[in-house]
Amino acid sequence: ELSFIHRYVPTTEPGRPPLLLLHGTGGNEDDLIPLGQTISPGSALLSPRGKVLENGMPRFFRRLAEGVFDEADVKARAHELADFVAEARKAYGLNAPIAVGFSNGANIAAAMLMLRPEALAGAVLLRAMVPLSETPKVDLSGKRVLMLSGQMDPIIPVENSSRLAAALGASGAEVRHKTLPVGHGLSQQDVLLTRDWLTNRE
Ligand code: MLT
Image 1 (spheres, protein in one colour):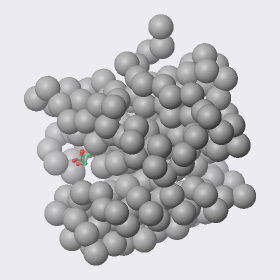
Image 2 (tube, helix red, strand yellow; image 1 turned 90 degrees about the vertical axis):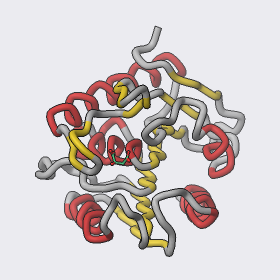
Image 3 (cartoon, protein in one colour; image 1 turned 120 degrees about the vertical axis):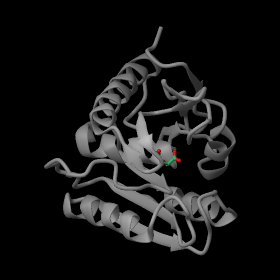
Image 4 (tube, helix red, strand yellow; image 1 turned 180 degrees about the vertical axis):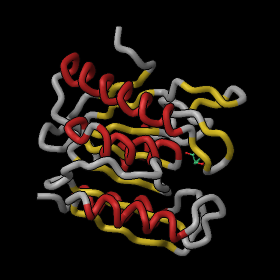
């Protein structure tokens, strides 16, 4: 028994990187499976359900208010999720996955990059914000990160997502950050840009 409720879809194209799919608040392990299949056909998909409940809605860490995080919980949950990734890699025989996270899922992926960089080969952060007020000292060289933000996102100020991109870049990650003319929800542009970015990796 692995430590998170999850869905696992085996690869049908072993050349494609495994994806760790991380849903937003109120989502579950099923939500991002179709997205994963669209952005990287044939990739193995590992999709856990967040263990924290907020009024019955699954999330990956506790928050005190919208955009105000319980940072001790962020850290503990990032480690817990990284431990699950290690377990699942062993159980399913996977390389380190690329995280694809939306909203709360993107925020825990950013925290994992900072606290447990070995857990991820890279990350796609869709509508992410700064997860920890102080970025831990970490070497992210060799990690590719795609960040897509919404110009009209009512939850995440553009300045905040730019600060996250800068922090990841300053830690050595190869960051591509684009702000789209959209809100917090995902758009067709997110899907196309993510697919291209995943396909053009060497
Ligand atoms: C979060 O709590 O991670 C952010 O506010 C995004 C959200 O889940 O709404």
